[in-house]
Image (cartoon, rainbow over all chains, first blue to last red; front, top):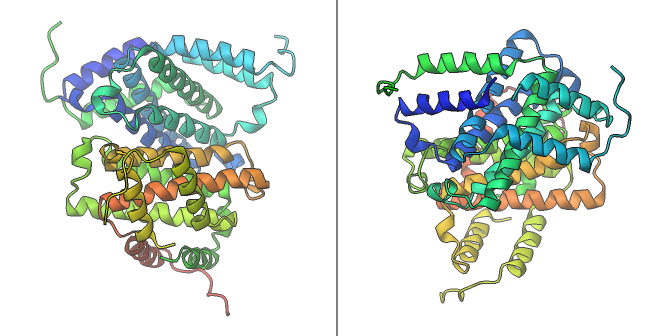
Length: 108
Length: 108
Length: 108
Length: 108
């Protein structure tokens, strides 16, 4: 998925519905947190093992929550002119320094 | 960003650190919700207008939270074998039906 | 409200429904976060001013979310044998030291 | 704990610090969600069994998060003139109807 194209698409979608007025980063961060909690809700009474073995109907619902989170994340990044890809790359590099590998990478 | 490649990278990163045992969808959904709240925290005492006008230092911190959310989202999708791109496309189509445009798309 | 009595009541309620097995502090913290997000959801597209002026139907819904949060909070505290009242008193004292008053208390 | 007295105390505390301007229900619901996520964070990588067996230092930190949640909950209720005790009573009654007991209350 090209996240930049997604952001553009979402911007147009909001403009065509007069939603732009609601989409401050503050409001979007609330909407994102709400969606993250809806994802959480699917797993709250499951054991960790059960959470890895969803049936097909449940997996579809979880996929929809994941889509909602991805959509709001792209909208916030777009509003604040943040490049998600660059931010992820920077974070991965910083994680690699912070948490050195404890076992060698597998041969491939 | 190719989300599939990101998922593969994150899978390898976790394997090299013996973290796989912690990464049940249940636990990852908790970690995602925690990161979503850290994003929320940046905006909680700002007005909506202020939330759109972050200074450079604050914007960098927000970018890091956005990266954390993107990373955990990719990890959960990978664990549950959910295709984020397909889920987003399906959601956008369903949103377009649910919320018809109230104004015509702009000429381009 | 006597929070201790509430905790006792909730413990009995869970026991009579065989729910005890689900009520680990981990799971309860997830349920609490889900309820906190449901509260958030009521306010996400409102301005700050609007959020203070709920109509009666909306206020009733918000009251129910607040009750849910209070209930899960009491359940977690009970499970971990934490005294909410003592914890609140300690926190208020620490806040008073951390954030000195900037204006004198009003005469009453 | 008398929640009404706590609300009064918190109102005074905010007034003495000129914080009233920040304390819209919208903002307070964000602060509450942030604190709920901080509680979540303590449990995210623990098993359910481990989450019930915190050591003393960790239990103290969890108690502080619980206090923060209780404080923000009281503040929101106060702002919206919602009676937490009445809301909890109503919710418990509605839960008792919705989820009938599956085993008799224990003899006491």
